[in-house]
Amino acid sequence: MTSEFPPPTAHSAPSGAGVDLTSRTALVTGGGSGIGKACATALAAAGATVHVVDRDADSAKEVAAGIGGEAHVVDLADPAAIGTLPTEVDILVNNAGLQHVAPLTEFPPERFALIQQVMVTAPFLLMRRSLPHMYAQGWGRLINISSVHGLRASAYKSAYVTAKHALEGLSKVAALEGAAHGVTSNCINPGYVRTPLVENQIRDQAAAHGISPDDVLTDVLLTRSPIKRLLEAEEVAAAALWLCADHSSYITGTSLPLDGGWGAS
Ligand code: NAD
Image (cartoon, helix red, strand yellow):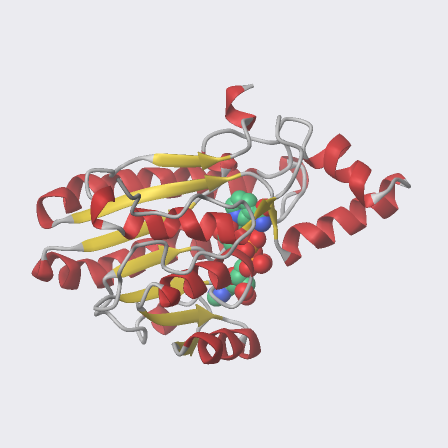
C-alpha cells in the first residue's frame, strides 16, 4: 500500500505534501516573515491563492511576488484597515504577533493593549469577516498560530501569555460554532522556532551572558525542551497544511503542540 504522504524530513519545505488546495483561497497574517512566510509558501505550493497580510510593505510584497499571491500592507492593530481585507477566504491563518519582555510591575500598559489588539482582536475580526463565506460553502479552516505560551506561562511575558491563552479560547469557540458548517478551528503551539525574532534573541543573550550562541540555545532557551534544537518555520507550516487536508476534517477545537517534548516535562 502506498502512503498518501512522503516520509517527513525535519528540515525540508513542504511542497503540497499530498494536500490539494487548488480551488482554495488563504489569508495569512504576518505573512512577510518567519512562520507566516513559511505558511504562505506551503499553502501556495499546495495550490492555494494566498493573500499575504503584513504591516511591513517590502516583505509582504516580496513574499507575495515569490508565491504568485497578493500583498496587503495592513497594520492589524487598526480595525478600519482590517475592514479593507478580502472576506472570501477559505483558509485563515492567524499568525501575526509580537513580543515584549518586562516584569508585570514595569510592563507598559499601551504595549499590553497593542499585543491584545494584534494577537486577539485582529484574529476575532478576521474570523468574523471570513466565517460567513466559509459557512455559505460548507468548508473552512481557521488555523491559529498560538505557542507553548498558549498552554503555559513564563515570567515577564504577561501580555504575550495573556494573548495566546485568549487565542486558545477564541479558537475553541470558533470550533463549536463552525462545526455544523464544515469549518474547523485549531491552534498550533510551537516551542522556539528559528525566525528572525528568535535569532536576534539568541545573539542578544549570548552577548549579555558572555556565552556562545550554541550555549544560549541549550542552557537558556531550550532548558525545558528534551529535543535540543530549534523548530523550523517549515515544520510549523507543514502542520498548518496538514490541518487543511480533508483527512483532518474531524480535528477541531484542539491545540497541537510542536514543542520537542517541552509539555511532557
Ligand atoms: P516574525 O517577527 O518573524 O514575523 C511576524 C510578522 O508579523 C512580521 O512580518 C511582522 O511585520 C508582522 N506583524 C507584527 N505586527 C503586525 C501588525 N500590527 N500588523 C501586521 N503585521 C504585523 O515572528 P515569527 O517568529 O514568525 O512569529 C509568528 C507567530 O508565531 C507569532 O504569533 C508568534 O507569537 C508565534 N510563535 C513564534 C515562536 C518563535 O519561536 N518564533 C514560537 C511560538 C509561537
